[in-house]
Image (cartoon, rainbow, N blue to C red; front, side, top):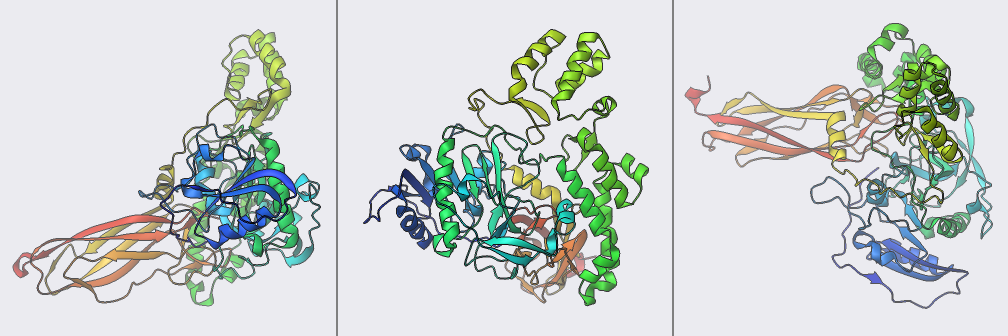
Length: 599
């Protein structure tokens, strides 16, 4: 997915001048936040005015919560990705307070700032959604009220990148899809990035709280179950990016229905906030299935370009080692290198798993819960442990489990019994919510303000999955001589970045931008590492690799230290998700010396 940089307005205002109106059908007041200079905004306004009593537009980047008062539904959109903040640590977006609860539609990846601010399950698993929907919940209201939507399905080949996911076994060679966009990003032609891809959210753990609805998936470059249209609390994700003029007639009706539908959730804030890095246990089944799929050396070699196959076996070994590093040493000692054993192991222990603290793709079997033979996410565990306390049966074990999987800290059996009786009908267990039983409020109003978004977490995450170091050799050079600049890059296990000059698809090609000091000139192009072909067909770099380039210090340069600076632009992905494009700062020095000083 290519970042689309846009020019933003410097004036904050809501445009309230009403043009000549087509007769409206529905008595709703709608505020659309977008780029006021964009043709896209004009298209949305014209379209919405055909259906709703009042439609105003505002600058998405400068929108404030106070501007939303008096409107029934807020629609947030932006042409491309929103601009980054000046420190490049986050995205610019509306100024909404932590208790914002207005019915809101988020369109595609243009609303990243909002999703991250409120730590929504409607996250950016991948900005790689194509032009068609599948896995539609056909009975859902947005396909029937107030307009009847009659999707026309067509048969398409099942995307090759769906292979290796747990859901693969239920998929055939083809699938029925509903074409949502007449113009837009298509997986059939992934190199055409003239139109922004849409956005899908993480499906695993999405439905583990009563504030969510998975309405439809769509053709994307990640999971067959990824959320293309879904709701959490007062937010509804419409992941497809196309503007109204490029939606099919039935998709336009569906969008109108979505606007009417989300109005019902005014005041219903999300119940669960998703910390970045917190994953559902279902991801462990993804890991095991991907490990099994990628372990097929014959398939892997066949997927590589012929000119790269001589080195592909070594690359395959590195990939397999990356998977194994995600597994605990004890588990590797027990199960060895057979992927089938890991698939079976996690299937057998799924109901006893919890995420290892501080480790994104590491999950631990809770031997306490397993010893009772009860799932740690079913209320029977709470009943059993409370009864054990009452009977004096292994009270330490019972109390440990009760405190581990709830937010309570009672010490007496009677306290636990009363709490369980009062809360039973409102209890739900959420992996995303911290592997805890949580209590739905009586009126489904979350009184807990969400934590502020940690926009610096993105940089921390980037440093964790990709590291880069620039060095000069030799460290000392005479005026008039050449030196080599070596950029050594390392990706974390299972992660990759996209090949320079040759990535064909939604992945952003890697680029190196250098700022050369006066007196230093290039004597050649970058010598690039050998890429491999990823499962989705794109050429990538993975593991440890380096870029090299030669430079010359001109004869007139006076002795002294010179600094070379630059940026490594990249997009990091693994088989499960993609980070947004990032910049890593590069810096190295060399010393220009007199002829007699070099040695």
